[in-house]
Length: 221
Length: 239
Image (cartoon, rainbow over all chains, first blue to last red; front, side, top):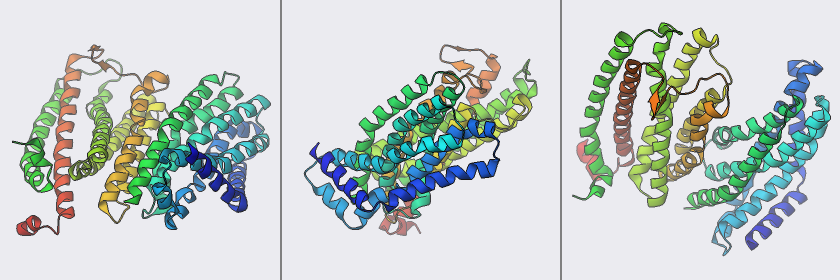
């Protein structure tokens, strides 16, 4: 799995030296979440009830926002082709790229989420569950999103097509992710939701890199 | 004779042309029989009254929406593993019919839900996952048509169909996993909790829809073949 290491290091270094995109994603996340109280009214009880769902939808959209660049720039300048020709197993370096994508999109979103949860007036234990759910769920979003980004490489209608392809696949993650925090807020156990999210993460981490590799091969010939 | 004889688009074009009218004919006969059984012979439901008769459209359409996606994903697997042209064309040809049945299932469900549940739509697990299925179909069609090179679209869409097939068990088992508004199934392989005449009406309609789906896919596949092969000699010879 040496391919994992260098692909991860490369993408992470690139993102580190151009932090603008990551900050843009975070700003988008916070901005969209703050639009909801303005749109639905500032009733604290209502906000506490819809908070987990709103934060999840915003995280989903923010994670989706950074997807098109995952492979597109490497595809455009030929780097991706060189990577395909490299002796490393494709699933390895693809996983590295996805892990780097999660580090610069999913992880910052998870770390920022308690702040937004406080704005929505969520109880303290629900905030913990929300963070745990985001920690388990956002890698799944990065994995599934990477598969869709690879499928739509070089397609007409870029971003809109990617949304149409990726968002339906995100639905189960959204359902269980938001369900976990809502269960905690209602005084129920969030464990079943978190277990299912964990199961999704394991299945996606095992299977999706191979699907992404297949999609990149399709894009290459 | 070799079965792969018909995997060439030019020979399949003639075979599909010969078969499609038979499937449409069967679909009409079965639909007439199914509608007769459903609307004339089947008794009025003790609880729901006459409203329940929408199941003769709704349930078969919902079955077909899932089944067609499964068949499409199988064609997708064949496309990717054997790199065949015809399987990808069949997958493309099935997608609009599947999307249509998904839409019909949602639409008739809404009209049934209004008098029975008191609402057109609820965010129930089965309804939501059926809606996701509709978006999967639309995404498949959009992705298949998004590339200059149709072969590229074929293979990308095939892979998407295979990824999306995860949704099928979620729809099918949603009424058992989440105890929400949509009722469980009345039909299983072990037996049925409904009147036998109702079951026959539903089965006849399901077979009618099945035959229609095959016929429609064959006709659409013929169009796709003509479009792809328009520069070849055999297509020009026909024109």
